[in-house]
Image (cartoon, rainbow, N blue to C red; front, side, top):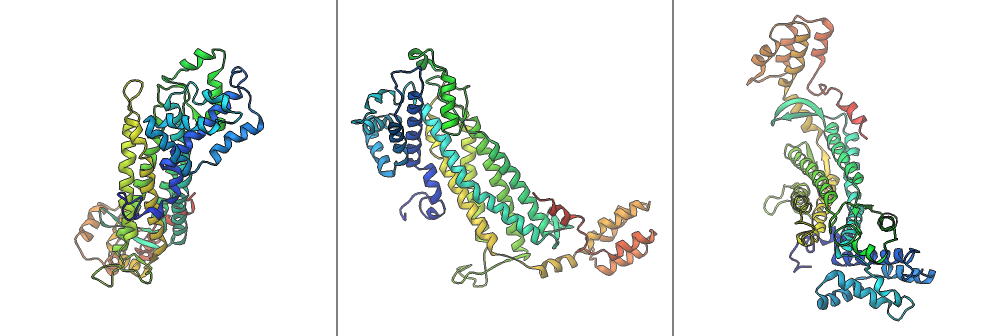
Length: 451
């Protein structure tokens, strides 16, 4: 693969191997064959279409075996036919006619692709590809959520100085910050699962014109629904033109992009925590962190994931905004774009595996966390002025502002200020006992609520 133009097929090919069965040209052709065979079997099972006779058990198995036995070698046979036809779906039809020539099925030859437009086959094939792609993509997504949840539980009590706008702020815990990302990602994963993958099998402009011209008595809606939903595991959409409008695809790609955006956000935060020394990284023997600085262990896994999330989202965003738009009953701009669905999935897969690798190398530096907290006594201004408000003390915010803003504040400064306040004894003692490390609210309890 050293000559591959795309890093998906070159440098990162080993990370996306499972997607070749979902989005390659071979995968597309196999799904087209699957749809054509499912349609032929359904026609044969319809009593109101006597010319397309009932199949024997052996004939049914023969047809299904064509799908089961379909290999890249068989796909190449279709590509050779396409050289002549210059039409990829017609090439599949001719391939299948060749497959049944000389068998008892030969007299059914003209019912292959019966009353279909190419998009009947393609839209269902693309939906099946997405179905397979999600089956491959969702496990690493879920693994990231599981790993984040584990780390959140492990570090739920470990205090950390928070930063809003890059400035020291009320403390949090490592666990709670990780739990936020785990929950955000899980919400998007739930949305992905809820999106119906739609399909149509209703002819050239979407209302069974050709079907009814031959067999007006057939319930074509019910027949095609059975193929789409029972046989292929998709959901029928009757409200189409020549093409299924792709709105569900847009919804899916938007949600996948949102999942990636949240992961990108996480990658940047972890990168920052590593740069601040909150996390270190386990070294791997033989690995080089920098070509010139031997001490460095760069956060390359999170950087790699961030970059690939961006590339995936560039593809997803174009798919999402382009696919729902087609001139009149259809144009072919969707055809070439749909061939790049696997590119978005590929870059996503690379990103997920990089994040997982990075998570596996993290090690917490509690000493640095504690040091930062102990150097940030100014953050105690928030609880002190809040208790002062409770006590009715005049202008508490302004007094703490004068005490802390731009000043060097330590434990002694805070203790002296609190001791001079006219507070209830219990309130005063609670403030005196409080430290930056203990001022974390219910962060640990929030982690317990993680799904």
